[in-house]
Image (cartoon, rainbow, N blue to C red; front, side, top):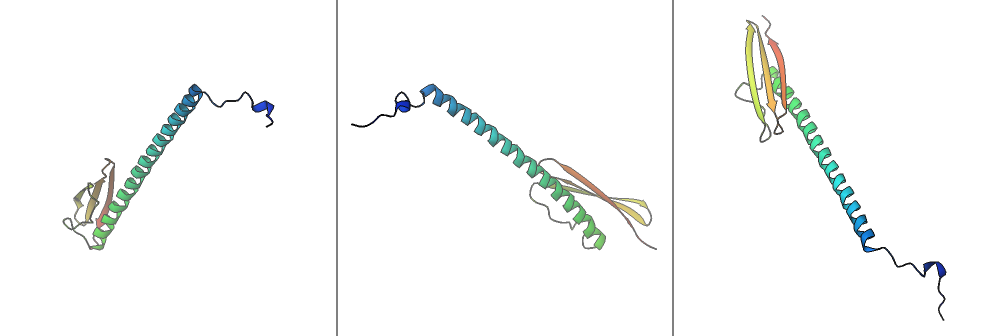
Length: 119
């Protein structure tokens, strides 16, 4: 004759409402974590694009300074990015060149540099 363990005789498992509540809490917490991950990824993407825009603007001005680029010959940009280049002549030997770059997430970077020719 098999022996019965006294403390397990009345146990039958979880009830259906308990399982449904646990599944609901798990689903809500999982959705919260997924939303948090999505926000983090968007923030990282915005930060990366912002840093990339600064780097491209700086590189553009450095290439102008080296004489490797002109107003029409510029550093290539990733797709859906926009660039504006403005040159202002303030005094005879000096000019100010401004590069504006806009990312697909509508972040705008503006970097200016003065170029003065020695006489």
